[in-house]
Image (cartoon, rainbow, N blue to C red; front, side):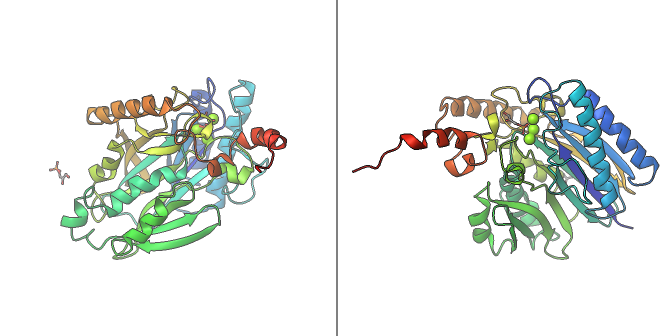
Length: 365
Ligand code: 13P
Ligand code: 13P
Ligand code: MG
Ligand code: MG
Ligand code: MG
């Protein structure tokens, strides 16, 4: 029997402003998921948060895009929203774009990463959850994990990785997808992946046998909503060891806090800071953007763990570097490239200001 991991996340209210989901909201989600476990919809689950986003990490035997699993997550977020409204938390129900569930949570606001596989004798899985950034934030680290031999020694020295991986990429603007194979199409792949706000990695497969290796939530909230209501704050599932990159190879690219879109008002580039869960509290200028990494062993559809992977002093220097980059970027104030480029600002509140200025312009002779 196959195991499915579904990670479904949403921001349904936080304190104070956009910093952190309230514990009571996670407890409410726990009630709903616990019921779903009792009735056999779920086999197991773990609830965490990265900043103001609640992440429901669920295992079951129902495959991807299962209506009951998606509805369970939807109900958890709905009930948590009611509580957030009572507590007058900030942005109560922020990521829920609909009042009613219609068979699949995709398109309703929450982000969703899923994968189904036959468990190996031992199956280490790493779940990454971000806040104050967007799905393209995973492009660079996932490329380095699965295609860069200077990151992943196994691509060179381990025969089970040596043939490389296939990348499924979504064009989130045109709603198209393409599959590219590495290493042979590496330069074409990078031509797309560098455009992090448009082309995002959805899934990665091992080339030898098509086995699923990674899955990312790619929903672009503001494109769906048609106006700015916050960032998409993505999650990713990555399998490791025995035919996949080692856990240490999976974590290694996060040691360089690369620049991602998000941060204050979802409108600024800033460094992605790898933190232990207790430090997933983006405060300075609502950031800088954060990523947490939780390591599980998946055993007979149960989640053993997690271990809080960035809770390691070896990542202290990455955090110091992220703070230095944050300081430098902040000095630019409202100027690009700290502020996002104009095409990305379309999905923020800036167009309303520009509209007001339109009448002031005259033709240049
Ligand atoms: P251990 O000897 O600690 O199991 O390490 C094995 C390994 O390959 C680490 O990358
Ligand atoms: P969130 O998407 O995390 O709610 O961020 C919204 C925002 O505008 C922060 O400044
Ligand atoms: Mg928020
Ligand atoms: Mg958020
Ligand atoms: Mg958000």
